[in-house]
Image 1 (cartoon, rainbow, N blue to C red):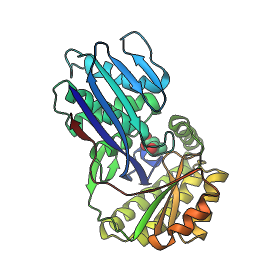
Image 2: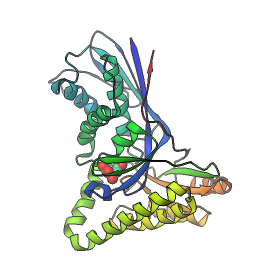
Image 3: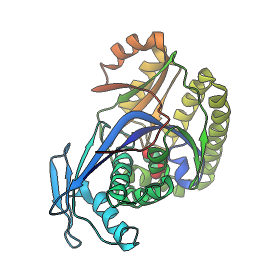
Image 4: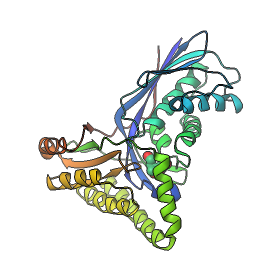
Length: 319
Ligand code: MEV
């Protein structure tokens, strides 16, 4: 028996970091995917094709760091009796989502792994259960995750997320606009950046409270504009939101160069997406500007990906 599952990466349009302290955020799934195939095997093996790592599962043996979330998922489903008895398996994990680039690669792999694992054990992987289990794995990677990454990789589409609750947002993506992901080429750990922001918050609480309040207002206004399909307005709010993210201390010289080059070359919005301090910048532009943007941004970035929002979260393919 073989079960395969894929789950999408994501961009956070508004509210990264602010969401960790309970403010709202808006994210969408994008057409980059993590894939996990699980087949029967004599021993339980977890393999990352991209990282060239193989781990033979045993309760008491720690895996290499990259594979820890998957061991955590297996331990969790056993400890909580979601799966009564483990059927040994070989899981192969692959992903097109750049790692540590703010695009939700860890959540997408955890979601795909969880859904495939449940299905392989004859269970129906509901969205709620998959997202909850993947959140346990996110805790290992990110220490204090808000839960937005596992939620969007599970459900797909556009979501408005706040304090563990999500609401789907109906957005008709306009084909005359393009979304570019511009990688700074600098990988960073989300957990590290989140801690840095929380430290700044504790030190300057009375100032930060106000900034977090403005972020909340931006996300509410963005929700109205997205529903109306006003992407010009969304671009402007992205620029304002980027300013707030700079004030959290998570921008870098590379990020600022990309943002300013994009805006000078006709983009309507450009901002950090995800944790920042490296990772990716998301750029929203009219289709006609894209060639010029790619030409100019290629001088600053090792990788530019044109992506589209997608409406589906994880998808199971039984083979
Ligand atoms: C990471 O994709 C987004 C952050 O807001 C962290 C989180 O929400 O868990 C930086």
